[in-house]
Image (tube, rainbow, N blue to C red):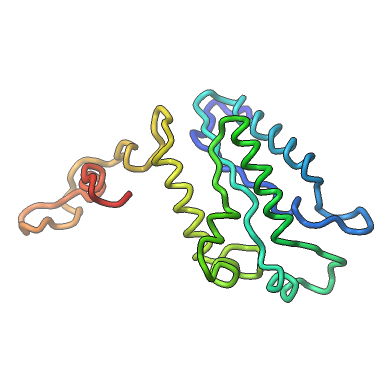
Length: 194
């Protein structure tokens, strides 16, 4: 990442596979919790070292529907262990790290489980997000962007409109005689979408 221009925002997610239970052979993706936390710290520090303007949001480990995961796991794999309790521990470690480093974090483990039907509605195979799970993730990220006191702000309502000039191809206004640039209208309406 030695580019001249670094990103304004990086959203980092690691830990879902690390949170798998250890295989009895010692093989597999499991990473001990303390090592996973230190790996996240190293990655975060590296990203932050690239530019003073780069902002970082970490995503914590989401929950897992253990029954659905077991029923969809292929028999070609050996022993595969995923538990919601282990995911909680990895999620809490990520959140703790973010507090230590002063970073923004999306607590996926808690956010997803706010829905009563999370185990079936938010996950497609017990692990990966469905559209409902993805919607929760997006809402959490947008909330952070809205509340963050970053200069400049990265919330979409605070970003300058790229094509703010009026165009005859914009939507017709209610007067039927002019057009309305919807992006400018939304930007200036405080009671509109958050």
